[in-house]
Amino acid sequence: MGVWDIVSGKTAKPSHTGTSQNTWMQFALRAKSILLLNIDKVLIPLISSASDATTAGNRLEEKFNRKTTTTLHSLMQNILTL
Image (cartoon, rainbow, N blue to C red; front, side):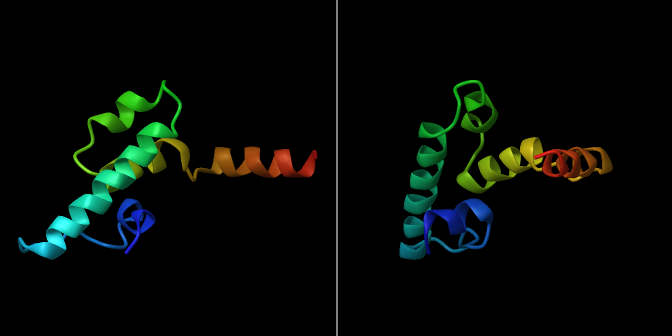
């Protein structure tokens, strides 16, 4: 288990309390702090209010990973005009 597994949601939060949940929380806090330290200050309010790193990662994905016809056309145009 690593911090990216927490952010991507691959490793879900354990439902029972104990050492596995404590370990998950340590990785989740580390992942969220890495995101906060490496993100532009304009975007900090977007993820600082997130309850955990998985929610923060989902918010960033919703903001930047829009898969619409318009964005796909724009990306294709950028690639073809290189």
